[in-house]
Image (tube, rainbow, N blue to C red):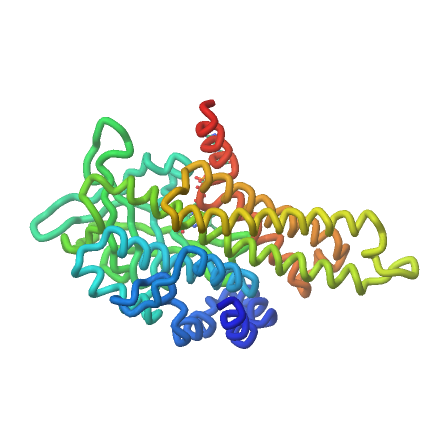
Length: 369
Ligand SMILES: Cc1cc2nc3c(=O)[nH]c(=O)nc-3n(C[C@H](O)[C@H](O)[C@H](O)COP(=O)(O)OP(=O)(O)OC[C@H]3O[C@@H](n4cnc5c(N)ncnc54)[C@H](O)[C@@H]3O)c2cc1C
């Protein structure tokens, strides 16, 4: 499976294509469509909806390989498979499943996720974007920030407040919102990395959605969000481990070929030890990815396992890109070399989808602290 994915991605997403998409702030549409055309979107979708019913381990392999070629392509793929495929499969009505899953399996739809708000980031359950029940549906008002890919998606899995309960996690309802509805305004945010697709700010004013847009139970959506975030952590970690391996391979090759003082710089212990440390971190990251995928598939994963995975793989990607840039010296700092993109993109790995500080809080709570 890995070989098949690699063969296709080598062809449709070579390094210069990823560089061009990043430089020109252009989503990798051709590569996304090629993955769709070859049936990869159907991987985690059951056969009755047109997919191949692959396991969490299969999904991790696909995302690792895609991330190795271009992290933002893997991000786009994961968002559709998580906030479309996984969410609808877990919580959709039979009608939603019939209407959406076959299209997702064919790669005809894109999904994004609207959770973060200007006043609720790490404290995500404190969200205030409201959905008010009206005749025939709901009206949504509020503001989201960092909805990545909203401008290229068909649906946003939008997390809203429908009532106020005793706890902030109560009274939350998820909607599958058509991104082109009247009353939605999307503004691109300029970011350090993730430039091909990037992220957006989204304003919802009087957006009318039908009752059939609710995904899961009204007022009880937080538990579902939690389960999506576990799945997200597997996908993100696999994609970023792939991207970190690409940064490592580039640095290793450079260290073998760049000569100073009459020998390859990789023969200086200061450089070879960096590469040894990078290899160890990558081996551990990959082991954690496949351990978590296995735990998920056995229904044995814990919140703490998900946090360990997210924390370690995110910090590894950041450290590997940073060390890689140092190994390239002045060329690492130049825009013609890809290391700066890994360096910029990897910075998000310890912020987005729950910061490293929040992952440490979760792990500490799991230890009874
Ligand atoms: C490029 C990009 C893409 C993104 N994509 C999406 C997306 O598609 N959908 C979406 O919903 N969100 C998305 N996000 C949002 C992302 O998940 C949040 O940025 C992240 O959860 C942190 O929230 P915040 O930025 O508001 O920081 P804050 O929560 O304000 O945190 C600021 C700092 O305080 C620390 N901190 C906060 N609380 C604690 C605590 N209790 N203990 C210790 N430290 C703490 C944080 O770790 C951080 O260092 C994206 C963000 C970026 C930058």
